[in-house]
Length: 367
Image (cartoon, rainbow, N blue to C red):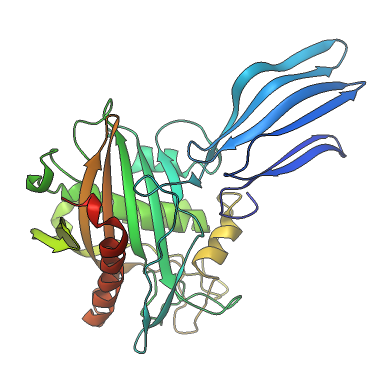
């Protein structure tokens, strides 16, 4: 994955001999190739299904050792399943960026140029097995679902150290943006985040949102960044008695109604790495560690903070609704977060940014 834009680089090699190399992009058709060598015969087409996270092939491929062996002979065969993949929000891969540009708090920036998709299920996938980890640790006993996100952090100049990783910044360990959770009806009897599918009268299931937030910060973000597993486990337990929950009556945004939820005193790990000699350091969890570090913000050690991966206690506010089709429930969640002690106007600025995106682009997906 040369970049988080959905492209996949495929190389076919024998030892040091590179036989085929191509970057497959989400919007491009399959790429055909033919080879006729003493040890290899191929007449095939390769492609990528960005939304399923699959690399596929059609045609035939034979290799020769002592005898010829057929490795591929099919009209369409999945060679590899990948995570992460390119996601969708409201049936579209388009990214509508919520923007903060404020004299008090500075500006924001997108983490990735595409909707990021992670499959929360037990299936093996190449590149990163974070979906399996979250399925086992955070959603044990839940049916599979798909996580799609557009995330923003505090903005910095190209190549500068991050604010997401700076414990002296108001942006430390802060994301805002939006999710879509896709739940197949053959597995789920309700939308994610709701106790039933009753439209605007549906009751919020706050524990789903709590589990999702813990999963996003600790695993989708910070474990993928390179935080050691043992540094995340203390902040991955689910105990609703430790947090404050406030569900407000539905509010109108644009032309439709959205449910409102606030969670307080939510403790999550951070990806802060101290440069102190005896401090715990980042590790290599996946092939995408460096991509995540450049996307969220490069490590930013500060002399006043000698311990790595210090936790933060945050407040989260969201607007949420669901829509459905014949096959699945789709829950949309727009929101922001801030440290409990932060200026309340910081969270208000985040909510204003996501409300603008709802009203301008997704109002019709509310109730």
